[in-house]
Image 1: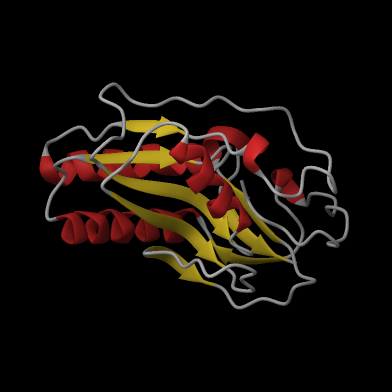
Image 2: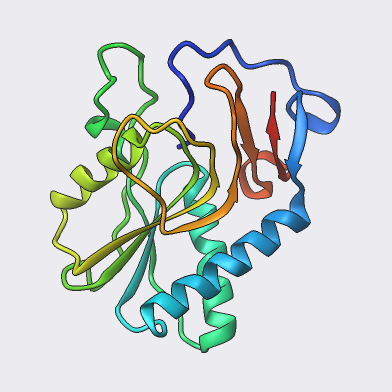
Length: 194
């Protein structure tokens, strides 16, 4: 779930072929390269795929987690369990902003206890989504280690949270919007800033 500033302007109308307005900062090939790099970093840090679980944060973190798992499987020859972790009811801004309906949480067979869990999301902004994910995970189990992989880190943290694996560091103003689109959900692929 991409974090955006609470006072950000309404989404702009889409450009050609459903692309958001603004400047392209990652195209489909850039995203593929970034996810390949993140996958290799995860394997190096974990010293292989043993006891690894990937949990995507809906909505775009889930397909990103699946793509990372595919890349790890191609390198290691091992299927890494992938799940999804809904954080909607754990957000600290539910009173200020109407939330979307709860998404599906799916924990892989074998759970997360004693495992290395990598949370996967599209954009890291204030850190509040990640804090909510950590709270949600506490209700499910107790991993041995939790790491964070994001496609884009745009800065402006409100909480002392940082990503372990980053596809692109994207300095941005708080008033700017970062839009991630993935083929699985949006029929277009890229990252735009406006």
